[in-house]
Amino acid sequence: MSKRKIIIEPDPILRKRSEPIEKVDSQVRKLLDDMIETMYEAPGIGLAAVQVGILKRVIVIDISKDEKKDPLFLINPKIIFKSKNKSVHEEGCLSIPGYFAEIERPSECHLEYLDYNGKSKKIKAKGLLSTCIQHEIDHLNGTLFIDYLSKLKKDMIIKKLVKHKKEIKKSIL
Ligand code: GNR
Ligand code: NI
Image (tube, rainbow, N blue to C red; front, side, top):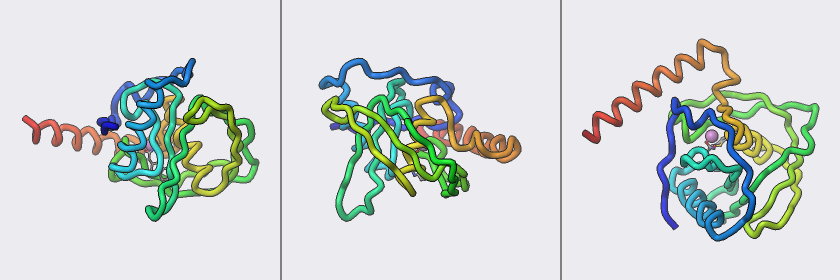
């Protein structure tokens, strides 16, 4: 397994739509292994392939509290049900380091996907898992949580991220 670099906003790749996986082969499983390692290392509770620069519909999630790992691998996820009921959770994103915001989303969602072995599965998610799945599927469609904020807040965050990226660049020169 190897750790990959996480892309920080603003970057045009984060705004692209990811393509479905045609076949779950060893290359896809290597990507999943690298992604879960990158996510645990960060640390985060979810990661979409686009965040490591791969425009494929691949997600890893683990919302367990560090005692015992419980990784979830989602390939070509498709939401087949969203509840009318909404709930609000504080969200963060590894591509938007240092910023958090309360985002309202459907509280429950049902999902169809392929697992690590390419087997078709379904799950029903609520609470943090439901929030995280919707956040990750947004990534596959080029959407970030800051897109749900006012233009003023979003522009302020992007401006600070640009500054943050310039400082990182300076420090490696
Ligand atoms: O680590 C993460 N935490 C988080 C908290 C609330 C809602 C969503 C998330 S996902 C985020 C990791 C990430 O950026 N995934 O794309
Ligand atoms: Ni994110």
